[in-house]
Amino acid sequence: MNDLNDGQEKNLNVGSPFAISAQKLTRKFSELTAVSALDLTVDKQTIYGFLGPNGSGKTTAIRLLTGLLIPTSGQVNVLGCHLPQEANKLRMKIGYMTQKFSLYEDLTVKENLQFISRIYGLTANQQKSRISELLSTHQLTQQSRQLAGSMSGGQKQRLALAAAVIHKPKLLFLDEPTSAVDPQNRREFWEQLFDLCDQGTTILVSTHYMDEAERCHKLAILENGIKRADDSPQNLMNNMPAQVVEVGASNIRQIKECLIKLPQVISAAQLGTHLRVLVNKEESNPIALLQRQPCLNDTAKLAIVRPSLEDVFVSCTGQGMTQ
Image 1 (cartoon, rainbow, N blue to C red):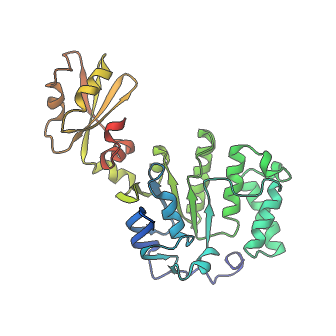
Image 2 (spheres, rainbow, N blue to C red):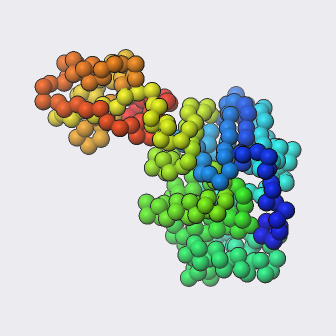
């Protein structure tokens, strides 16, 4: 593969600071608009996240950005390639790990990596050294002769990532890559993503986990195909259009039913013995507002607390009253 052996691709898209640039990107399926007028820029050598529930347009957006789907309208430039015209050219320069394990379960770990390496045109010497390197990096050396279908969820995840980066792509797409693994494997997976980013790879990852979204350098919050917010996680929390009040009381369920009826309250969610209430930022004294409600007695404890990324998600989507 040229990316492994020469420097022809090193100057790819040098004139632009962005690995991905999209304007008014739209995809419709009959009457359904899966992605609507998406404006997007992703800086090189960063981890960019798509955060949203199932059906929010994350997978469709990724397929548009990889050239697998043709947009209904809008413009896309990925690694200097204009899509969909240069989709075939782009495919040799990106890696893509799908949500569902898509390698061959009746092949061994090593056979899967050999097969993928041939697709990307690696020579025999390149295959040998690269596969050995990836088996070690992803802790799969002991499983090299094991059938992929007999592996655990975490092992399959590591194998899928190894296959996606075997040709050293400049840009890696990951579609909910940790949805079927435990927290420890998720943590280790993200350490590998940071290592790849430090080595120069740009990563776009979709997730519905708030803790994963907070690890991204920047992220977009998607709802029904529409981008509701786009910034670094810290800036999103700092600029959230709501204040967070934590309420400690004995009758939390009754208090919640009372407070969500207030027009100034965006949402109320119970966390253990406390209630987390999002109040519109235009309310000058949210604690006083809540204390005036008859459902709160003198023993209730109220305090303004730091917003979380979940609070941001709730405040800028339609998820408010469903918690």
